[in-house]
Amino acid sequence: MAEDSNPVRPRLAPPARLDDRDRTLLGLLAEDSSRSYAELGKLLHLSAPAVHERVKRLRQDGVIKANVAVLDGAKLGRPLLTFVHVDTTSWAVTRHLLALKELPEVEEIHTVTGESAMLLKVRTRDTQALEDLLERIHSIEGFTGTRSYIALSTYLERGPSPVATE
Amino acid sequence: MAEDSNPVRPRLAPPARLDDRDRTLLGLLAEDSSRSYAELGKLLHLSAPAVHERVKRLRQDGVIKANVAVLDGAKLGRPLLTFVHVDTTSWAVTRHLLALKELPEVEEIHTVTGESAMLLKVRTRDTQALEDLLERIHSIEGFTGTRSYIALSTYLERGPSPVATE
DNA sequence: AGTGAAATCTAACTGCT
DNA sequence: AGCAGTTAGATTTCACT
Image 1 (cartoon, rainbow over the protein chains, first blue to last red):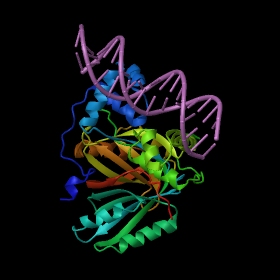
Image 2 (cartoon, rainbow over the protein chains, first blue to last red; image 1 turned 90 degrees about the vertical axis):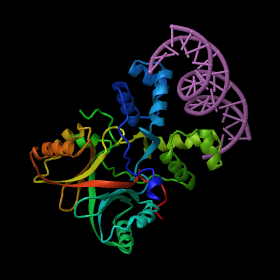
Image 3 (cartoon, chains in turn purple, green, brown, yellow; image 1 turned 60 degrees about the vertical axis):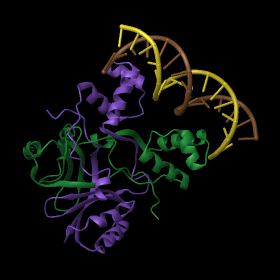
Image 4 (cartoon, rainbow over the protein chains, first blue to last red; image 1 turned 180 degrees about the vertical axis):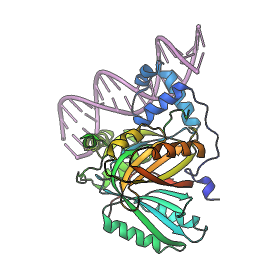
């Protein structure tokens, strides 16, 4: 099935076994992955090869999914961030989700509990571009309605934290 | 004011001037920032130093905000992703936002239009941890109610796209 | 698992076109 | 603006603990 090969589909995978140094290391890399192994080693009181070994293992285990550049939406010409709740009539909308992925404005697609069945995070140039996008969504079969929440200010935006849950 | 020095506060900054190669380059780096300049050069039909120059300029201009490692929430012990809409009575809640930043479960904080005044993206170990978090939010002065949308499946999760808006 | 040294590769600077 | 050559530093492998 198509969803099973989807790299962002939530996994049933159990949590990885991580010690304190792993978590500290992950925190440092989640903040800035361009640090050298030598620098990380100093902060962790380890040698560069030892850090390298750990990073290799964490990548192998899928704890580190990728190293990416974080871009500034506004400077790219997309200053308007909006969360869109989408009401759907049927659950056979999965196929249509693939179409939404092709739209560069769409950053996140989740199916959720609650009144809505789907939640999108979208970034557009202006309200006009948002309206165009909403029209396209409404025109898709099975998508009956949307409620939009435009972000006025973003105070925090980061990825999953490796800090221990307890 | 504290918010003005906040690095994730939306900027009034105008979009940067980017040519097609810049956008292609940004797309490649947003996907995988660990590629060498030589490899990027091959893909862009440029020499390695030329790519380096462009990357340096894009970082300087703030289009590239950072290079970070993307971690797997589930493997870190936080398989439960939830979007929380928070109702607030007053607009003097800005100070309290700083407190929320300290919680490792909280990944995003936005003020939004619509019925709610605030939107949080949070990742917890289980529903119990989510409940604990919601209790803490409710106990904060000015935060009157919350509505939670638990993500059942995530089909897409990425950053801003550099693809030209038109 | 971690260390230290060696080899290979990459990044980053300089000057040239 | 981009290319070529050089140097300094980083990544990665290996033998040893």
